[in-house]
Image (tube, rainbow, N blue to C red; front, side, top):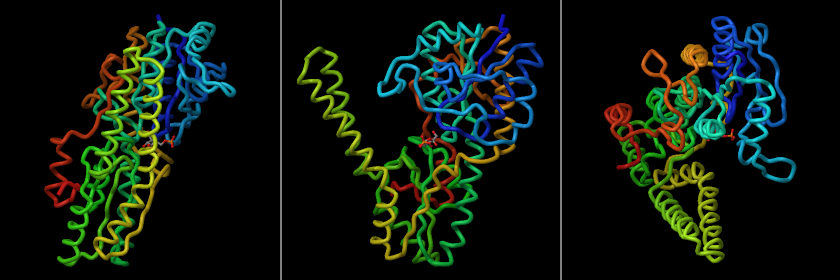
Length: 384
Ligand code: F6P
């Protein structure tokens, strides 16, 4: 029987985290008579024994607040910076869990958090997770909280960029977060009426993008909005990265076969090559804008929305989703269902075994209705 439960938030913050903490906490205390402890700054709070009781008072008034009252970090239990070293702190987390007499731990986060939570399941801890991220890329759930708010923020930004792009007869290239998934750029691009939407799932041909913009100019629209996902790549960039990643996989396989030192050097080289390409890609939105200017003869400007997309008050949709999943989480704790993520399924919530979630990323499938809808309203997706 669960009497004492811990909660932490981990990974990048997102709107709806406080609504989720409140949902879990209020239901755990009110409906099930549990005692709730919050851990600071993700898994690090358990390592450094930084916690605070979450009573009705702490859980009150936080529903509408962005960020997380607990703080967050991207620290991983098995590879945590401690002083100048990186150490495996998993056993310290287990010790704190036992010392605090926790019966279960709720980990709220994205794909990385699900993976870290599974590591604690493997150590015998009772874990339940909740899916949050503005990227909407967690496997096994219909949607993650944070996404709906970010969708609104990006759509609003695209709306505003329209009037300035139109007035100056310019191209505006707006970079949208989303990591390696295109949900946010695609969703907000459609909702905001972007003319071109570039996502990581479709390697783009810059000539095809330029032609779509030139076509608009020829037909009387001398401005264009290009919504580009931060992970989007041109065909050439995608091919270069794919080649480097393939040689890293080969190098890793060879070193697994025990072919010693030379293989280690090869692996390190392959890793550096992948990192170099990824670093180069961080400037690709600027380069795309310059290239489009050359190819179309129109002036082009870049807007990088950055962390604005994660800030501020959660939308009504995210508050509702986080409360729905949070309260369902408390019910699962009470039933003694562990090792699961509470997934959104239609109007309900469903436990999904963590092994079915970790190591996978939910990307936009090519037959998704949003792809069809975008094409059918004449959006260029960069593939000709
Ligand atoms: O996962 C959420 C996210 O905002 C991604 O969209 C983005 O790639 C990343 O986090 C940025 O991380 P950080 O805040 O650590 O720079």
